[in-house]
Every structure is written in C-alpha cells, then in structure tokens.
Image (cartoon, rainbow, N blue to C red; front, side, top):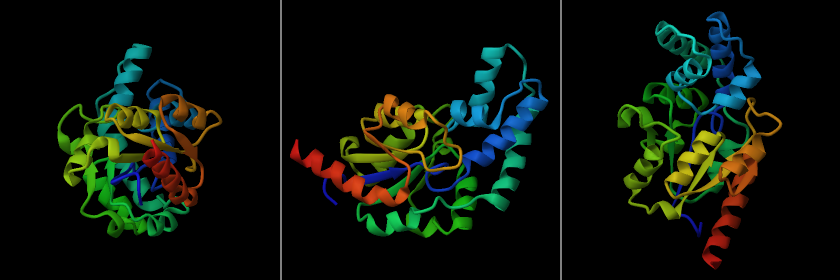
Length: 229
C-alpha cells in the first residue's frame, strides 16, 4: 500500500478491548484508597497511561499518599481479569487481512501482558515477533514519550515520516506526533466517551474512525494524499 512503509498499532483499546477492564479495576482501587473516581472518568482522563504514572499524577493533584502496594495489587487483579474477560476489537482481523503494509505493535503494556492478551484473542500470529513494550526500553520511556514508536520504526529501518500509527488515547497520539509520525485515532472500544474523537483530533490525529473495518480504506486514502504532496 503506497504512502506508508510501516503501520504501528497500539494494543489496549485498539486491538483488544482491555482499557474498560483496566478502568474498572483501577477506579475501584482508587475509590477504596480515598480518591473516588468513576470508571468513565478513568477512561477519559487516564486511558493509555501506565498505572504507575496514573498514581503519580493523582498524588500530585490531590496531595494524598497512595500506597505503593496499590501498584502490585492492581497488576495482579488486572492480569486475572484480562485473562478471563479480554476480547478482540471487532473488525481487527478483517482490517489486518486487507492491510499489506508491514506492521508492529507498540504498547505501554508489559511484554508478558501483551503475550497473554494477544494469544487469548488469536492476534499474536498477525504481529509476532514485532510486538514491542515501552517498559522493555527502560524506566520512564513510556508514552506520551515517543521512544516506543521510534523503537518500532528502527526495527524495520523505516523513517518515522513514512509511518502511520493507530491510537485510541491522547497520550499515544502525542507520543506518535512527537516521533514525527502520522496518526489515525480510534474510538471503537468500550471505554470511549462523548468527546473522545475531538480530543484525539486536538492531540494531532489526522482522522478518527470508530470501526476497525474502515481502517484499510483510511490508510489507502491517507497514503494517496501523502504521495500527491
């Protein structure tokens, strides 16, 4: 497909419907710890962020200490819920079957969690071995920093300007734009909210889709536009 040499997919909320599960677990833990927050607000404010960075952000904002044990507690609870409940985003296999551009996954989730989720929903063969976790790059290199997207491009020897990212979070869009890549926003997962598309556009997404089935046509259109410049 002309226009792009690599498509980089976020995982949570793009390939698997996991953000809503994380929001439920994390809102419950935060509410119990003295910071009442709804599942909807979790999705709107913190989708795409690591649990560690969510806790740091809340501590700074609310000036309340959050126990370090919440880190481990959340990870164990979330892994158990994801293994039981995570589902594929509708239309993903349809889209992947029609995209001929080489591809990879660039995620803030750990490699172990990515492996578990992708294996469960049957997507691992579509991407392996090109499944990359920002946590493997070192401390403090997760989105919204661009490091994981630049790492993905480097593995293929592709210039960032020839890359297209598919993201559901403003943090991810900011990371992709900082890497010098173009972005399609996605709002088709269960954690979406009324202003989701507008916020992705404001963050730098060129267009936003709510159905993964529409991605191949959008990639083709954006690629033709790039070639015409």
